[in-house]
Length: 433
Image (cartoon, rainbow, N blue to C red):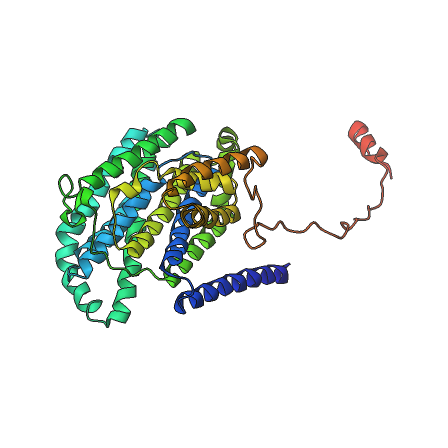
């Protein structure tokens, strides 16, 4: 069985490496032009968002329409970090990373503190979580930034551009994912108590709120460099095919290993029967918030990748209509199927933004928004479980241990004794041999 697992892993890794090398060669030799490069990168980013939604909806059973809100948070956070960095300011990098790490530590301490009390209300937990988040980022701004900014600028900034740029970009992607995770954690504490339909409406409202805030980043929020509804420019275009490929692979591997763990089985059990999961001792609230936060971190990472591919961000790109795209990909590919989500994510962008734009006559490009709902309706009528259903490629599928092939060893019985002497002893007090 061990050799079988190794063979499966090697086949998957070899196939993934082959795809990476082929696309890299096509891009290097100019066979794939800028248009198709953008289609591939966009498909990968949207697939990352859809994988996070599949974890929340397909595996945990929580209907969410808020993934594009966390996608936007990750995109703007990562873009602001690199925007400041290329202008000689490391404050964005220091504040986001230090604030996120400090907030994580305070969340752990807060959880242990509140765990000592009986039946702490949701709003109490939410209020304390908001307060410790504000405290963490206040310390990052007032204490960490003045002390660490010169150190970071002298160390990372003193390296050659070929070395410092990947480091800063990596940390910016981490910061975007961490910020999206913190926002989802705070939002999920009260909202995950709602039922699935009401939860979906609440997450849709969250996406609208994020979009409105992004429209006013230069007025309500203290980020004039984001330029509000005019759109953010000046973002360094650092996204390359290796960054896209390995980010997507990282998300697939993390999701696979999570679902094969005990925490992943708890997440899936909540989808199957929440009440039964509670009765067997599973912490349903923790499983829900874990799936929601990890799925949102995936979306934030995808946002950072996408922002540094376009080198331009506009709030209109993150409106609530766009939030239906990951949902369509997950349902079309098959709920609870990582393979289906990856396949459909690329197919969706290739069909919607690539093939139909080229096939339809000039001036009729918007008809693609009529064609793809018809395709979706046909798929839902003919194959309601999605294109892949519950299918997974062998590398992603969980293998069950083999059944025993040998019969259990029979134990020969010992000598049979006559119980009569014992009975006689109990009744008469004498033992006859």
